Length: 200
Image (cartoon, rainbow, N blue to C red; front, side, top):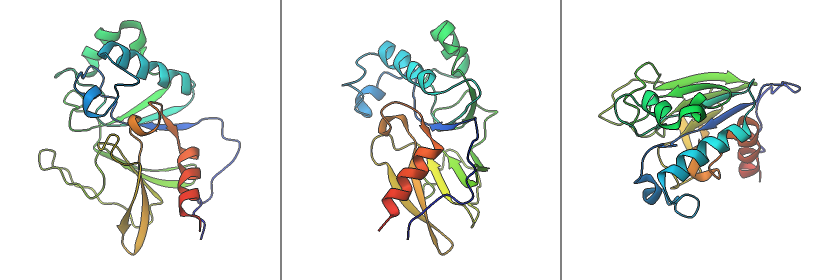
C-alpha cells in the first residue's frame, strides 16, 4: 500500500522546511559528523550552512530547526549573532527552534512540537522517539493519529526509520543537515520520499 499524506492542500504559497544539528561554531563536529569534504574549517561550515539555508527558503516560508543549532556557550543565539554579524539576521524566514542537548541558550524553546501542517500531523523533537535522555527530562506523548515523526540528533548515522505508535508503524525521518546535503528539506519532499520508500 502506498503511503501518502492525508488531505494535503495544493496552491499553498508558504513552504515549510525542516533541519537540525547545524552545530554552528562547533569545530569537532566537522570530524564527528564527517563534514570534512564539504567544510574544513569552522568559518567555512558556519557561513556555508547559513548560506545554504538562505538559498533554499523565502521570506514567507517557515523553517523548523529541531535542536543543536549552535555550540557557542550559554548565550548560544546571542553569541552566534555576534560571531556572524549581518549573516545572522539569520535565516531569511520565520524560524521555530526546538531544544536539543547543546541548546543551553534556548530556554524559551520547546522540547517537542506536534502540529498539523498541510494536512499532515507531524511530531517533532530533537531525539528519535525511542531515546529518553536522562539529562533532559521532559514528558511527551506521541498522538496515536500522528502521520510522521521528525527528529535530529543522529547526524549522518541514518535517514529513515519507523516507530510503533499504538498498532501503527509511523515513518521517522532524520531531518539533520548531514543527511540532506547540508540544506533544509521541505515537508513535500519528505512526504514524497517516505511514500516512495513505502511503496511495494
